[in-house]
Image (tube, rainbow, N blue to C red; front, side, top):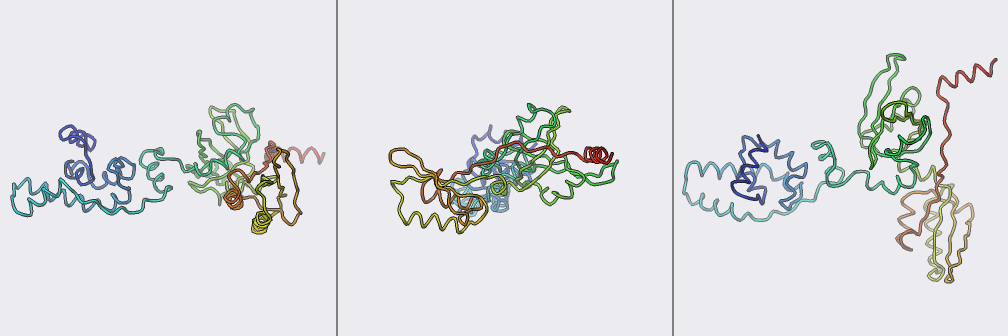
Length: 337
C-alpha cells in the first residue's frame, strides 16, 4: 500500500524533490511515520540531497507541516496563514545539515531493513588486512581438499546458539562474512569456551580452522579465533621500512627510531635502502628496535616517507591440523598399548 501510494503520487505530480514535498503528496495513512523512518534509514530518500540524520530528525516537523497543509486544502480555507503556507510549500528554506550518522550505523540500518548493504560494506576498511593475512576467501573453500586447514577472515554476520543433545554442552554456529560470500563456523566443546568472548555480531575476526567439504556447503571447525586487528602481531615475520637513500637525512633516521621506540615488540625490523643506482641494501636493526606490527606504525611511516614505505613480511604457510578430540583419545590409547 505504501509503495502504491508513492508510485501514484509520482505519476500524478512528477518527481518528489524534498522530504516536505514527500510528506505533503503521499497519503499519510499508507506511509506512516514508521515507513518514513525505514525509507530514510535504507537510503531511499538520499535523492533529496540531505544527510539521513537531518531528515530523520525532521520527520515529525515535516509530517505536521504536511498534515496542516492537507487539512487547510480539505477545508478550502483562504486565510492569510493558509496563503503563506502555500508559498512556503513551493520554497522551503534549506535546513542546516546535521552530521551524518557514522558509516557503521548507516550500514547497520541498510542491512537490517534490506538484508544487504547499499552504500558500502563494513569490512571495506579491513580489506588490506584480509588480503594480507587470510590465506583463502569464502568463495575458494569449496575447491580445497576435505579437512584442509586454512586461515580465513571476515565479519560475524549472525550467531546461532544451541545446546548439543548428545553432550548437553553449548555450541555456536557462526556465520562469517567476507567481501565474497559467507561460511558457517561451528564452534563447540573447548573451542566454544575458549573463543566465545569473540563471538559477537559485527566483529571482524580471523579464523584458523579445518574445512569440512563433506556436505553441500563448506563448514569450518575452528582451531583458533582472534580479532582481525591482532593478525599482524601473530603472523608478521619481519617489518621492513623501504627508504630511498637520496632523500634520507639524519633527522629521518631519528624519526624512524622514534617510531620503533613507540611500538616495541618482538618482530625484527629491517631497513630496506634503495640507492640512486637502484642497488638495494638490507640492514637488520638491533633487537632493541624490534617492533609490534600494527596499523599505527604503518600509518606514521607511510605518512612521513610515502605510501608503501612500510612492508610486512607475512607467514603464509598453511597451519597444521589439530587432532580432534576422538583422534586424541585414539592416539592416547595406542600409545598406552
